[in-house]
Length: 340
Image (cartoon, rainbow, N blue to C red; front, side, top):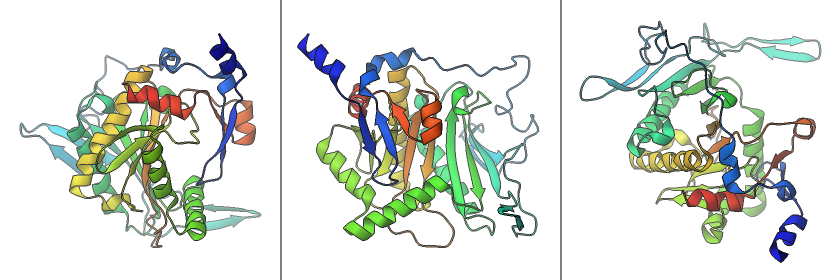
């Protein structure tokens, strides 16, 4: 009874992201038990069963020619990459990007490359693949990144995966996307600037400092192997937010070695699988944050993958302040994920 009273009177916490300076609220006053999050079932993506899946046979469905394909010993394919049929960024013509001022405003051509990375199985999501299959997915990410990074109109390459309708997936067949674009996103710029400022003040990589603390503290660690650490960040923006980060300092994802791809396949598959089992297959997004390919040097940065389960919806406070609210402490979330 005394313990229950303590929990009821425990204050919520404001936690500050050490890299970006953003604040988050860990709302212990309205916190849930970890297992309660599993009751939030994700919405199913409607599929017309009378029509063939667009991604099961991309050739038959009229997708553009593959830019990359992995084939199995039996001749079937295991993974393929092709241009998005409805791209957010159109491929540039002539290699130049037009800029224009419009009074106080500024605009430019939305040019770049928008590709879809599709795994073979219609039913198996990443959580259900084995680690070597996920390593192949990582290999595809790297291969396409290297092919596009030196294009004239490309300054940043965003690689991301949407799982579930709430996370923005409109096709049920598991797939990732790649957008090679002429601008660096504001959020990545926040990380770049924050990591540079920390390095100037401390002569040390901020992400390496986080890794060293998490490995010593252990409260937020979910999984690790020789090359990668999986943990719930101290200032988690959402319940069960999880990061996968290389233990060795390296700014550039595209420089990952063959052995590191195997290790990343294990770490990413384990992280997503634990979230899948712990939360009952929630919608989620993950994305790779890496140093831009804009010709500048970013020795202070440290690439990583951020996984954000869709465990809540932004409302008035979040929209008006940009301060996100999480209803479980990352320490408890990590403990629950470790057990799965």
